[in-house]
Structures are given as C-alpha cells and as structure tokens.
Amino acid sequence: MAVDLHLHSNVSDGTDPPAVLMELAARAGVTVAALADHDTLDGLEEAAGAAERLGIRLIPAVELSVDHEGSKMHMLVYFTEPGPGPLQDRLAALLQGREERNTLMVDKLNALGFEITIEEVERQANGPSVGRPHIADALIERGYFSHRNEAFADLLRDGGAAYLPRTRLTAEEAITLARSANQVPVVAHAKTIPVPDGGYRALFEDLATIGLGGIEAYHSMHEPELRDHLAELAHSLGLAATGGSDFHGIGKRDYKIATGTGDLRIPDWVVDDLDAQRS
Ligand code: AMP
Ligand code: ZN
Ligand code: FE
Ligand code: FE
Image 1 (cartoon, rainbow, N blue to C red):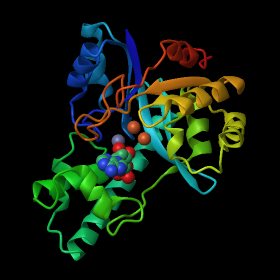
Image 2: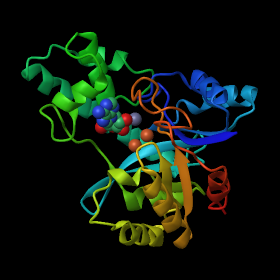
Image 3: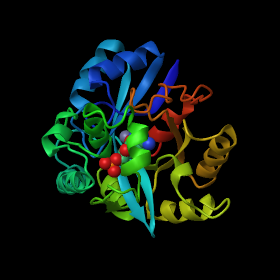
Image 4: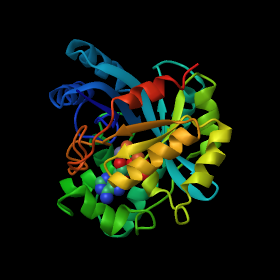
C-alpha cells in the first residue's frame, strides 16, 4: 500500500493522460492519489472514473504558483471539486494570463532565432494549462533540444533569455479562496523556497495564521532529514504534513510515482492529516 498526493497529467505538463496516470498509480500500489495539475481541474473527471474502476481513492487537487512577500512558492489546494467555486473561478484568469505570456515568449524566441509558432506550442498540451514545458516540447519537436531540462537550462528557466513572468495569485489570496470552500491549501516542495538558514518556522508560522492547512514534507526533492524536519514543524504548528512524488511522466523522468528518486516513503497517515484539516 502506498499514497501519492502530488501527481501531474498531460492536462497540464505531465505526459500521461489522467486515466493512464491512475493505472500507473495502481500498478505502483497506490491506494490514495491526488491529481494536482497546474491551474486546471480539467483532468479530474477522467481521473475519477479510472480511479473508481481501480479502487483508488482520488483526492481532487490543483497546484498554483503564488507570490509571498517577494518570494515565489507553489501551493497545492486539495478537495477542489470540479464546477464553479471561488478558487475555480480565478483559474480562468490564470489560464488567460498563461495564453498572453506564451504568445510573448514565442515572440522572444523568434527574435532569438528559434522558429516556433504558438500553434506548435499549444499542440503539445492536452488541455488549457499551457506553459514553459510545452514551449520546451515545441523546441524539441523542431530539433533544437533533446529534453525539456536542456531547453530550461538554456532559455526557459527563471531569468533565462526567453523567460517572462505570468499572472500569479498571492499566497494569502490562494489560502483565503481555498478555505472559503472547505478546501485545504498546502505549501508544496518547501525546498524550492528561498529562506534564510533554517528559516522555515517563521515562514510557516506566518502562513498558518492566514489559514495554511499543511506542508508537503515528503517530496522527491527533499532529503530524508528535511522531510522529517518539515513533518515535525507542520505538526508543531497544528498543520498537516503531506507527501507526493510530483510525478510528471517522462517530463521529469527522475521522479517515480510514490517512490520519487528511489528512497521516498510517504507515510499513510498523511491522508488522515489532510482529512483532519477539513471542517
Ligand atoms: P510555467 O508554469 O509555465 O512557468 O512552467 C513551470 C513548470 O515547468 C514547473 O511547474 C515545472 O513543472 C516545469 N519545470 C521547471 N523546470 C523544469 C525543468 N528543468 N525541466 C522540466 N520541467 C521543468
Ligand atoms: Zn509541472
Ligand atoms: Fe510545483
Ligand atoms: Fe507539481
């Protein structure tokens, strides 16, 4: 038995369709899974049908990129049922921001001598959440690179020659919208947040007062010591400790479902932690 509360399908920038993703999860022994595509809930219906057939409990989720006091972080929001809702309604604006930014990034790439079109970029995606990974795929299709990582390193990374920022919510907005609909906001892969040495406590104390529900402690990118530290920190603040691989199919080929880069062990109790955050 295994759990994995952070999976991406090709409705955003993973490479497997939602139903296939659930089959892969079942094969990995996963009994509780969360689909957390970037900025969109469009994969949830297909995933739910497959999960039911496979005997998996699917927790619907979404992953947002948010700003907080000058730094960027990713926020997972759990229990995002499809259909209208305060957060759901904001996703449309985020997708619109992506469209505008993609067009401008293609212009930048054209000016740099890379011959790709916005149509080619959009064709790489299976849904509305189109972004840098799909721009990378279009560049690969044209023969400029052989893997997404290379395109990011050369051009697309934050601050890279073709990079442009996009519309984002603040952490406070995301937390407030989520909590207003009994959804649970959780900070993803804290390792990517620039904090002063050992400074996670101050950050999470601050976010907990706004309504944060949890910290993703067990993530492919976290060393075992960091996982334990973040889980303890979460519990000391009355927050859930959660975990997920951040599986993207071959888009991030080192991250496997449930086991991450090999030694990830996500305790089953993270599901109880998460459930306990709902009222
Ligand atoms: P965007 O949301 O369009 O700004 O694209 C950011 C997404 O690109 C992240 O959420 C990751 O899933 C993905 N990403 C970031 N760095 C890399 C990389 N080096 N290789 C592949 N995918 C990446
Ligand atoms: Zn992604
Ligand atoms: Fe993320
Ligand atoms: Fe992710």
